Length: 44
Image (cartoon, rainbow, N blue to C red; front, top):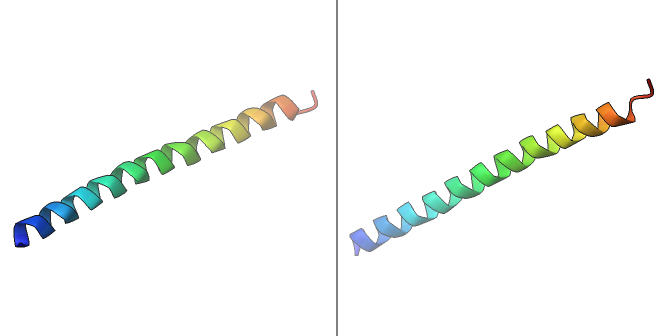
């Protein structure tokens, strides 16, 4: 019983870690896109 619970926790934590990584890269990408947009929208 304890082993199953531990495995479940491990699985959930891995999923959360993966989601955290994806979310982090998404926010980074959003910032980069924002910078690019600022760059292109700058009136020279």
